[in-house]
Length: 73
Image (cartoon, rainbow, N blue to C red):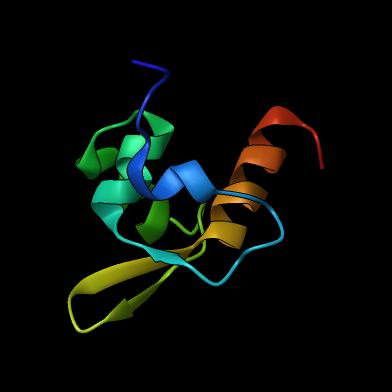
């Protein structure tokens, strides 16, 4: 085996912000539970939007959150 399979995150790069993620994918990437991911979205810590009852999050929003949390901004 040559490495870890991160699924959708294998092609994650800052210049490609067109992909929308689900809460499950967001939680998996951040290494948190789905309930915590929902909390981050509801509280506005990570910018996302709802289509019906389904949350969608852009890669750009995830990167922004990480930068803010790590002080890279």
